[in-house]
Length: 393
Image (cartoon, rainbow, N blue to C red; front, side, top):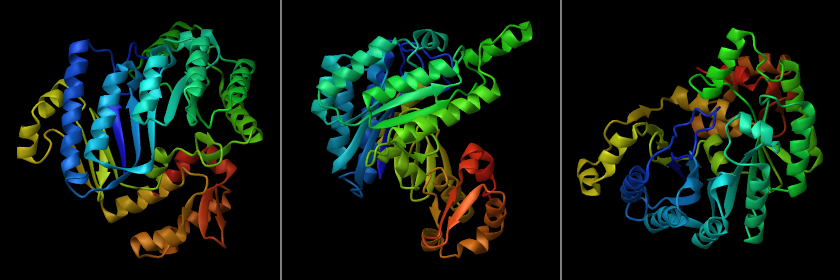
């Protein structure tokens, strides 16, 4: 089982971001943390040391910007998790960081509390590109944060990278990749910019299009070339592409995300966080004030025995089969027919034989007949969303 902790706070929302996050005053942050600690205790009674005592092999602090919190506060949350749950000795504990929100003291406290993996959001090594997407840091600030983390002994660091940004060229993007590779992080997450409705950047681009103004966004051919360049350069540098958007040195694949793709049980805490345990998926409410109200009094939560205002979905057998496919196919190793039979007591080809054969003929899927693994081809990776949609029952 893995745990996700949502910290919805930001100094300023990035122009492209549609995540559940925003700016809040210190009073609201303090109230949220108190409720979050109570939610951890609530789940601890169900699945932790006082309940089923599930073993936890990953804790992931995501956001928002978890590193906005005072170092002592984030460590208090982590220590509460350790008190309530049984963490594996080798558990992966990740904190997402914005380079503009960390210093040596904060990183030292993370290390002392047991954080052993950092995910640092660089996005670009070009300061003008960073400014255009609303990042609060410079490349120098990123370098300072990265070097501090190394000096303090962090041996597992991910760097987030984005392509197809406004004003970005093949040359500037290649330069960003080169600079990242010189640092030799253990993991790189590479994403192409998606204009999400409701974001500042989405509105800006649409306004520019209406006015006939150049948006500065790379054209489709350039975007695809950036995508291919990422794969080539990272492969040549010794990074294994183990998932559609993620590359790692051997042994450093993100344990937390891999658990999602393999359909392991997970608990999400904080506003908007999703959980899936025993094939029952729940989602916390998105409203921070209602969330604080619900968990403000842990005794009340215990008495009710359930959360108010959350979404609950009991997965059907068909749901689970579809998830097995479209989550498993995100990973380059793909899915196992043997594992499918074990999970569903049903032959894979009986359910998906026809669609698999057709996609193989279209060179979008491939099958290793010896290991009975089904995986995306290079062409399939390029159009992965449309391939995965074929497996919805």
